[in-house]
Length: 204
Image (cartoon, rainbow, N blue to C red; front, side, top):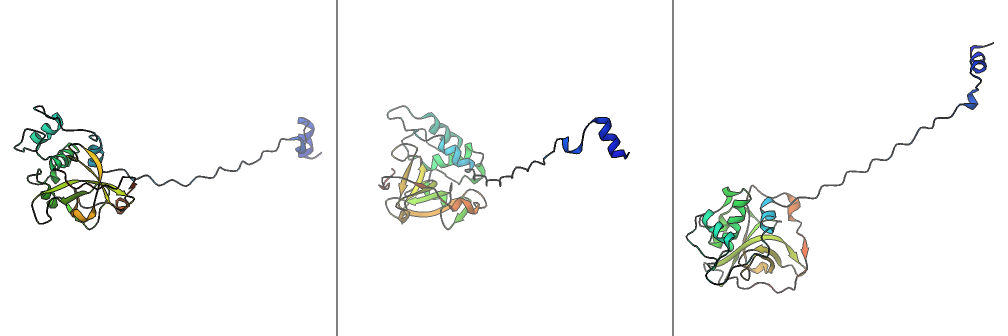
């Protein structure tokens, strides 16, 4: 008797009676989804203040007063135009103090911040003229997107005496700046907002 036959007789089993072990197909590995690009830290900080307003009368907004103190500006109220103070205060709170310009209260001074850009990127600083392009008045805020008409959507302070996001005409732009060496290419893909299309004309 062969060894195989002896084993079958001893265990009373035949190869046909043995359970068949099927090799399970390996589950396909899903391709990794590209990570969503995170917003710049200063833009996250700026969004925390959406809805913040000036306080009419003798009292003043404590956050604006703190920014004025942190930036060593010679004002102690929230009636003085504070769009530049908002940008400086946000950068300071976001740990980007090195990019705060001299006299940050002056909106056009932000044309000296960081790196010049040829077009807007998500989170860039956008400087506008106000009143007259050749004058000294202006406005400054952070670019967060465009609307359906191609206007820039700006997250800024002192916009109707508050922090909010409003559409601005690109015709008023004096420059785009980046508080750093420059943005990643993906940041130029601006999100599209729905707006009423009524652009801001005077932020005083």
